Length: 288
Image (tube, rainbow, N blue to C red; front, side):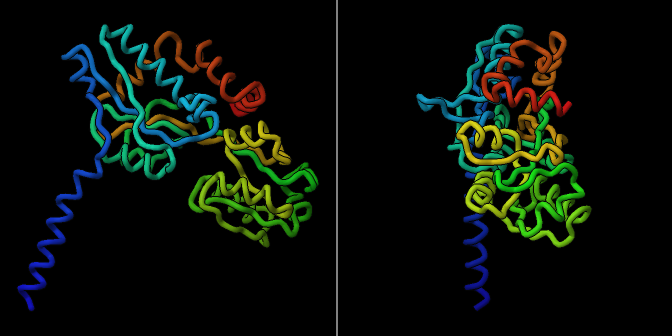
């Protein structure tokens, strides 16, 4: 009996050992290797996010993140005298999947999307400097009376259910509203931001916080939403992510600080307007 248990344990451990390398599916060249060879390739993992990483009419990936990283590749090639290229990896369907793959990958792998910079994540992955400040928008259907003060939420939102994705920063925002202004608030959970939006669109007695990119996408699609500006919140910042063993972080910091700062450049501002529109850019300006 003991022999059988030991054999079973051995097989499990052996299978686990074989499985570990499979987690690090993405790979890219280190900066050290590119410097030495004069050429190399990095990989872009991503999560599809309106405005940030999405497919255009021809099916090609584009967005704020894609354009910024293309500028980064160009900067490296022009200032370092190398020939660096990039490729996309993964299918973009899962934030968690993208994040975990980058975390377990090596060297020249970058994660693109709406990735909030947090102290907890800094213990697992490396971040680029922030490239945008997120803007969370309080939304309902149009039939709900407009909030002029958050103190009114217990009366004007009476009978409404708050939808949110559990464990997110928007979940925390909803919890804060509940504790400060509306203790009887009903909260229901959705699996993701797109599902949260679907709940609000299908239920006239629903409300939620929605990130800027998803809100602007909904407005562009002419969904019948009402924004309650008194509830707008700007706080967390988004950044690109890299594995802990990556040596690309210093070069990204150099790129973002060069020539007076990348986010102060005309090129950057054109990227925001291209993918968020004038409405999105104006909202971002109020967030600063």
